[in-house]
Amino acid sequence: MPVLVPALVSISAVLSVPVLTGSAAAAPAAGLRGDLPAYRTAAGARPVQGAKSPSGAPRLAPGTYTDSLARGDEKFYAVHLDAKSSAYLSAVAAPRPGSEVADHTDSLKVSIRDADGNTCSSGGSTAFRGRGMAYPIADYAIRRIDGPRTNCRRAGTYYFVVKRVGKASAEGAARWPVELRHQREPGLTGTPPAQPGPGTWSTTAPVPLTGGTKKDTEGGTGFNDAAPIGKGVWQDRIKPGETRFYRVPVDWGQQLNVSAELGAGKLEGGDGGSGVGVGADAGAGTGVGAVSGGVGRGSMRGPGVVAGSRLVASALGLGVYNPARGPVSGTRFVPYDGKPAAIKLFTAPVAYGNRYNAAAPVSAMRFAGSYYLAVSLHPDAAKYFKDGAPVTLRVDPVGRPQPGPHYREKATDFSVAPQERAAADDGMSVQQAAQHGTLRVVGYSGISTGAVLLLALGVWAVVARWRGGRA
Image 1 (cartoon, rainbow, N blue to C red):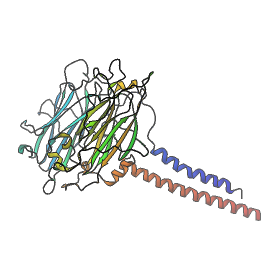
Image 2 (spheres, rainbow, N blue to C red; image 1 turned 180 degrees about the vertical axis):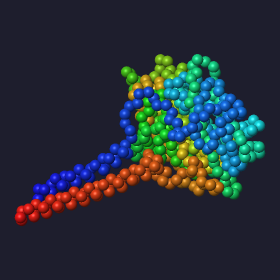
Image 3 (tube, one colour; image 1 turned 135 degrees about the horizontal axis):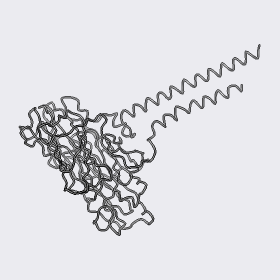
Image 4 (cartoon, helix red, strand yellow; image 1 turned 90 degrees about the vertical axis):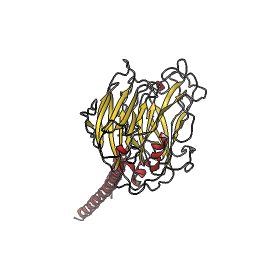
């Protein structure tokens, strides 16, 4: 029965094809980039030009838009708000990696005003803190339907005001690309949940996740292409001067415990540094909203690298944002001198009533949804990691998901579906997980069809030969 041998070999070849195809489709794209990638705006984002005053301000319906800001620009955008929902208007300033920025003085300010020019939100202000490193910064302004100002609860036209602040100089004079987003949070049925009382949740950060196999991920350039990740230990490779974004589903009642870590490194052409200490930007708190960790010692003078020292004063940065792109913790950096360094954050539990809390890191944890991690590596870290640094992320949404508030209508941006959580644990979006499952079904279907066909051909060949022998 030698004729069966090629048929069986063919079956083996067919069996291997769908498996290899599925693996290739699921693998992350490989290859080295030349210049560091710029912030990727949302697909379908509409370009607008903000006005210098309320007169002529372009109207922003819920959605995403793009504009740009020169230093000193203050731009107005009109929004029509109803009397049944809260509005979140955010701005992301994304100077290209390598741009000149000044710490603390180069900043972005946002606010919402009514038709009479009265401020309807405390607004926000965010600045660079990376010793001259350019990275995306974001903040939001809020019109709460149950806010303290009666004039701001009415339906009507309001104005979203975005201002770029900075000292006039030749450095950093380039325009900043800006992404604007208008999100709507439906009102509730019944009485809104109260603010959680003191002592109702833990402020002591648990030990970061350890053990298990590190899962690979590749962060995105911003909020729109952020890599989905869930509970687990993840690894990525970040180039000096680059910022990568990741999104984590965090449900009602959960607290996000996260750390970003750099391993030991060696100076290019020299040995690694020695000594342990905490840098000025590292922070010392381990409580809610605090970031801590980092190693190194030496003077904090100068931009990234301290002259005559192994120390990179602001090497690794971590920022955390809520689903409306509001900062839970603005980006903070820790120093690095060749010894392992970590920066950590432990949040308040997600609760609707947090919006009534005066502490910004607690107030930002006001709804469920995708929370964003922004991890930055200072350009001067190239003295240790010229070709990029392996970065470890330990991500743990602590606690069991709790029932959320009763919205009057579906609040897609402010919820977590079970399938979203399961997909993120595998490093995929819901769409990617669905496609992966489909490919697997298609693959097995292909295996079955091919195997049956080849077996039938093999049987046909044997029968034909047997008949030929009898003729």
